[in-house]
Amino acid sequence: MLPRFGAARDERGVVVLAGGRVYDAGIVLTPDGATVVSDLTRNFGYRGDGRHWLQNYRWMGPPTPVEGRTAVVAVNLGKGYAHWLLEEFPRWLSLRADEAENVIAHDRAPFISEVCALAGFKQRVVSATRHGHWVCETLVIPPVVTMDARTVETVRVFAFGQQLPVSGFGEKLYITRENATRRRVGNEGELWAQLERRGFVKLQLEAMSWREQVAAFAAARVVVAPHGAGLANVVFCREGTRVVEFFNRSYVNPCFEHWARAARLDYRAVVPAGEGPVGKERNANREDIMADVGGILRALEG
Figure 1 (cartoon, rainbow, N blue to C red):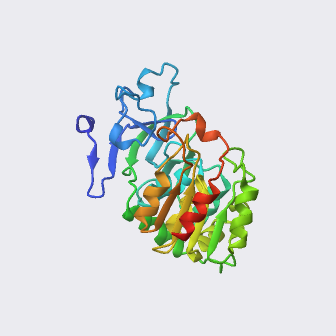
Figure 2 (cartoon, one colour):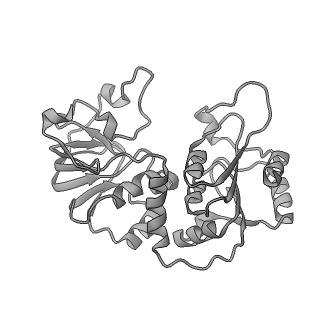
């Protein structure tokens, strides 16, 4: 598809597309705006028939022109920590300093400001906003990130190149969601009583700087956590660190298992026993989690 628009792809997989368009959180469109470029778009909007939701969307406004060379690194859900750190940030790191003057990216979360300040990115940021639509004089598109050891290494090299504090949290971490607005642990008191007795330290990641989080996970030998974005930090753990992630039976998402295995960690998932198969119901992603305390303790001992 792209060759007919004069696009070029280099040995890194970076595509340069004159007049390329971007919609919403990094959806790449052909210059005429008629087609989603699927192999350059990490988006959860594909339907069962293989078409993207945007292909039937009738309310797209006219594009805003962006002069010069503009890179798009934004990904779907990239305003959240895990998707930004593991999918959007590596794309930004892959760009050469002189490759683009502008970058379409998420930029409104404090953790993004902190990490980007450490990285020293020089591009002017065009904030990726819901239903934003841009037509770029020259669009630079780095490849979509894959869940593999190379991506883990990219993020680790950057993180461990920073001046990190000494972690004072020890080697056994429990990541709490007690201040979250969803997926809190309904029986956390029962679980924490058992973990505290075993020498765990409870962390509220949202109260920590990014460098403090990196240092804490790098020093850990065991991490216990409910499914949540903070588990993106397992990529900073040492090889062989045990990671115990627990879920509701109605929503089991294997994304952090993939990242943990890419980082060569000892990953254990704990799902409560029940009838029928485990699910991945979208609405269940918001429900509080009832921890299988016995299952978690067995995962720690095995």
